[in-house]
Amino acid sequence: MEVKVKDLQPKEVFGIFDQITKIPRPSKKEEQIRRYILDFAKEHGIDAHADKIGNVILRKPATPGHENAPTVILQGHMDMVCESNDKSFNFETTPIETIVDGEWVRADGTTLGADNGIGVAASLAILTDETLVHGPLEVLITMDEETGMTGANNLEKGELTGSILINLDSEDDAEVFVGCAGGIDTVATFHYNRSFAPTDFHYFMMDVRDGLGGHSGGDIHLGRANANKLVARFLFNLMKEHEVCVAEIDGGNLRNAIPRAAHVVFGVHTTKKEDVRIAFNRYVADIEREYKGLETTLKLTLDSVDAPDFTIDAATTRNLILSLYCAPHGVISMSRDLEGLVETSTNLASVKMKEGENIVVTTSQRSSVDSRKYDIANQVEAVFKLAGAEVEHGDGYPAWTPNLDSTIMKIASDAYEELYGKRPAIKAIHAGLECALFQQNYPTLDMVSFGPTLRDVHSPSERMHIPAVDRFWHQLRRTIEKVAAL
Image (cartoon, rainbow, N blue to C red; front, side):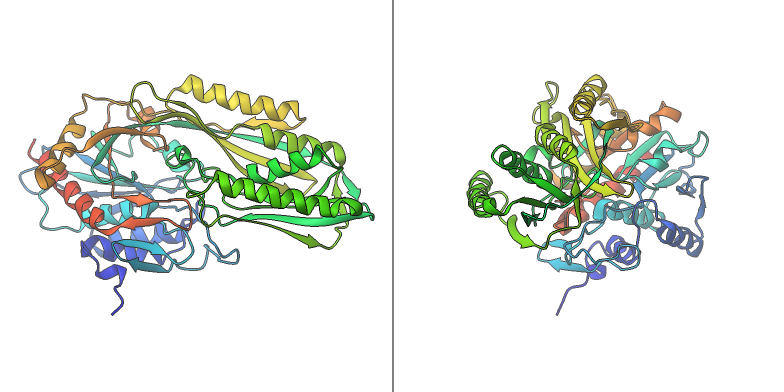
């Protein structure tokens, strides 16, 4: 008999998570999930409200006798990254189809949304757990974490009263996180003119698809292929030997996801079409060799297509391809403070043709050192400015600096060790968490982050380890109980 997600243990968590997967919740379009959370609170007699920006805050009084314990804030975000193997999948209307695959939960060809649906589910389950001994509880569920941290950036003073915050948005069992990288986006815009497509050219579509992709913070050190870079590399080499015109280019989607698919429509003189096929076959052989054992599903194809009506003007084509090829991507430096931690990285995230003859290149930079974050962002800016593009930086978000004297860090670590006989590792994460933003209005918050094991988030291969969810749940309960005893 097929196992359903709602029947997994801990059932109180997976039952809510199953409901959340059925609710569309793309970033900036969280109306349905916000209504679900508020209705859930009303059904269970929990005080709840949405603030001006759209975050939801829920409160539950302490177990009698524990009113004077520190107030604990549980925090997660309501939106999810929307990536699918099926380009027609509509995340605004279609529920996620979940599959129990051995010890893992995954989705059928889409992101699962365990980032951060499982954190939201655990928070709501805590609020309805009548056997839990706890001090005063607050739950903060933010909006639009994935595309701008809008909810955390706009959380007003006075919304929270707690002194301890437990972020439930990290992705590794037996690890407690006390710091994270800061980030900033750098966006380059090329303005082009339309040129009539040469009639004596042969046209191809180069397609890159089914790469692993993944989280541009958590997976950037794994050396996975960037589809935008693969397209740019081939065209750069081709342009050294032949006259090339480009009619269409598209790659990647989200600033915080390593692009796993891209395509370009280009043309060469008809007398050179066989040279292109030979060059492409050699290129594919090089890529297969370079990514052997890593990118096992990556596909590169080259097909003839009908001639387009127009192409991008030659100067813009040249500048675009040169800048995409030389723009940095990947790990820039490793931390000297925490072994194995990426300090600084950059992601060449997406290339999109927009209305008004614009081509927009979106990149994102991360670093646990603010000065290095701005340094790599400025390097990316310099590359695209040299190519004639207009460049803008987003507001960004600061790094969360580790506090190794944190009380809640010790309590959460003790809780895990008491339950499972193993001391969890204390770490910082290269991905961005909202914790540093909360410190702007709540500078005395004592914060920590932990969660169950998730893999390949921000890609259709996203999956969640079922036994780790059970350990996460009991660690969270034990941590809250230990705070209540203070």
